[in-house]
Image (tube, rainbow, N blue to C red; front, side, top):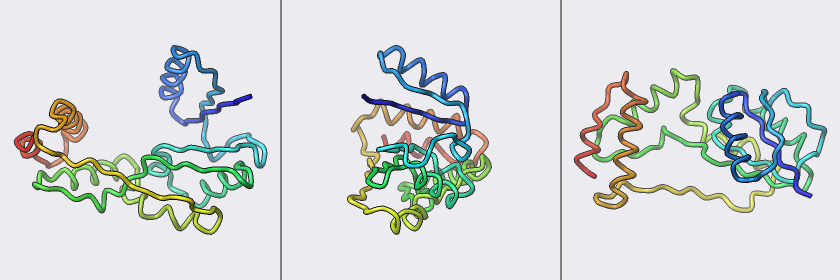
Length: 171
């Protein structure tokens, strides 16, 4: 039997997940709440997967303590989408790195969390594989998707000092 759980502090994301899962016939227990204050018993889960969780947490030590508590001894932890915008390479320079970094700080995120994570789990977990992928912005490759991404960032970073036209020219 597969028991799926999801927890998020943002009620809108829980509702979006519920709609998506229901429309695809997937049953899951979705909880609107704070992961750091959950009610799960010790060693409850075989697998824990996070996606952009640590980017938004102020206390990484507490988060990993909680994961260690609720993950079974031989459990698996998947960490997805934890960026290191401090290491972002931008060419040509549109100033998007500075704009993203600034925007994330204003929103309460840690734009360099990706480089900090290993210290919190390497002594507790057997790290079986670590990898990072990156998709370069190549002219005429996925042009439509890349233009949508520029539009997304244009809206998100409208109050920041950056030049989306530099990116559009390269696409």
